[in-house]
Length: 185
Ligand SMILES: *[C@@H]1O[C@H](CO)[C@@H](O)[C@H](O)[C@H]1NC(C)=O
Ligand SMILES: *[C@@H]1O[C@H](CO)[C@@H](O)[C@H](O)[C@H]1NC(C)=O
Picture 1 (cartoon, rainbow, N blue to C red):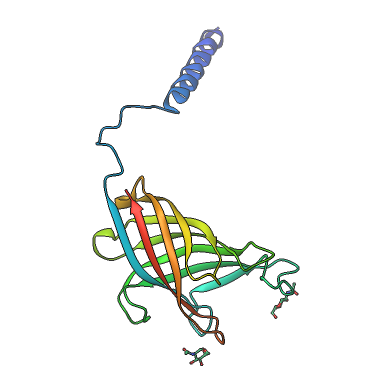
Picture 2: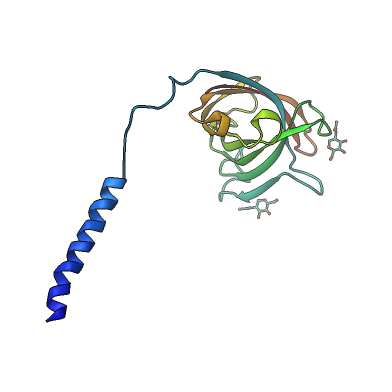
């Protein structure tokens, strides 16, 4: 008898929970802050892609069956934790890291898919990140890639990065690349 009484009560509770959950799924309100973006930040730093030596900042994690014979290294996937410094020397002050990956994604010319977070560690942007996702034709003088978002100071951010190779060691494969990043946030 008690079971018969409790059963509908239990079902009603389940239903109530289901309704609460679906109501919490989304909520749209008028933005409680002024129109964004309102700032434009220009960041300039050097990106060190260290593939050789005892302390590389990159890890080759995958390659395709034809990567070795491909003239563009098609299929190569590399995970990076590359230092970002104020000046071109590795001993220059580090302001952040580029953490993520790049992949060789073009079969005709060398073209990388870059997908990484710029993780800032110094100054007023320490703790903020900006996400870069784009195509990098490394043989071109200037490569432009989108900044598709960010966190902290760069919340709601968008913009672009321009990369210029500063130094490339053909023996070791290590590269130093100048980045100019413009973020609207
Ligand atoms: C590609 O070359 C690397 C280094 O020479 C070798 O370790 C790897 O087994 C090769 N991969 C294939 C699929 O042939
Ligand atoms: C290039 O890399 C090789 C091998 O690591 C090194 O011996 C050489 O000094 C480097 N060259 C320059 C200009 O840094």
